[in-house]
Image (cartoon, rainbow, N blue to C red; front, side, top):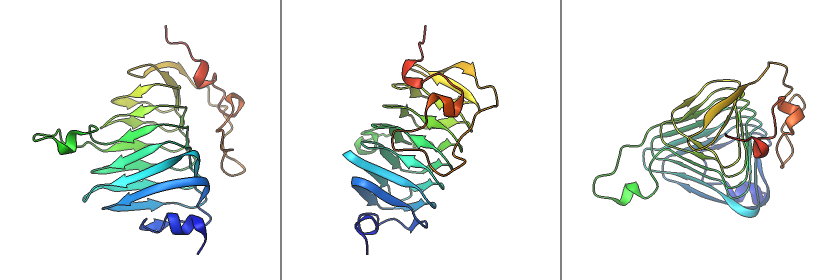
Length: 197
């Protein structure tokens, strides 16, 4: 068994050619974790964390990249589509952090990230969020509620700052590099440079 398969052994399914590229990952699976084909976890500088509660379901699609320091937690459901780039130190959590230990926690709410989305560095995706297909979320943004498909969103909470024009070129030749797509890949401004007013 390869080191990558050993580290991901607690996942219910790890698709063909999916792997831990470098570094480490923490898998705490009390529910269900399924990873599609050709998906990469990059834990070079800080481990990727995948955690599910007793009734939680975490699914990650095909050809998706999860960068170092990112934490994904599902108490009920986190669904991440195909061909998605998730930047370093993102937090995707369907419950309020710490709320599960409180006497009266808010109920978790499912998260959906649709295919071809791009989350830049340090994006927080809050309970109940939906990120539409092909949407780009700028660095440091906090996503609450619904972001429509094919937009650039930025801020806290994230707001649409522009529409994408439909001529983007993404993942034709497999997953993006560990550094994520370039602005030319999406036709969008670099999410790290989007100004929010």
